[in-house]
Image (cartoon, rainbow, N blue to C red; front, side, top):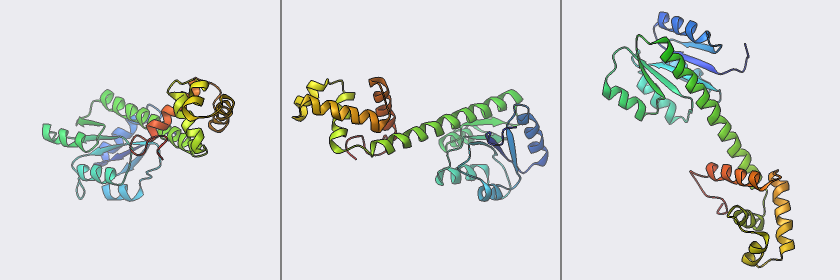
Length: 214
């Protein structure tokens, strides 16, 4: 088994439930970590890992809803699949509002659980990839001069080198030099790649400043 494959955390105070779910999840080649104590899980959980959390709602001590809320308050981005033997519409609504990826009732259907876990793994892997692309875009953007950032925004807006030269009061040759520098610093070779890079940067700044203002 790949030692760096995604890890599925089973947080449930029922040993039998954890054992059964672990066997089921193991059939699709995923690693499983067992947690009978929700507080021990919170203390030992690696928030940097690519993982999915399968979390029982009703447990002694901390409830599953409390654990979910604490995870989100602490910035954990792992998808959480909530399990309950006594589900209500209100409980389901509160779970999704708190950030749960899925809400399933016990006894859990095997196919439904596997689908929820695998969807969670895919979502987390894709989310981490987007974050990495965003960090890379910001790092490269930080290397650009103020003028190069202006040229970049106008290139992405669809202006030609001559139009950019007129807009910025530069010579066409100077604009071409800036465009060449953009390609080198951003490590792109085509206009399409440049636009994709800029799009990743815009997404990375969606919750903060926008390109050209930072």
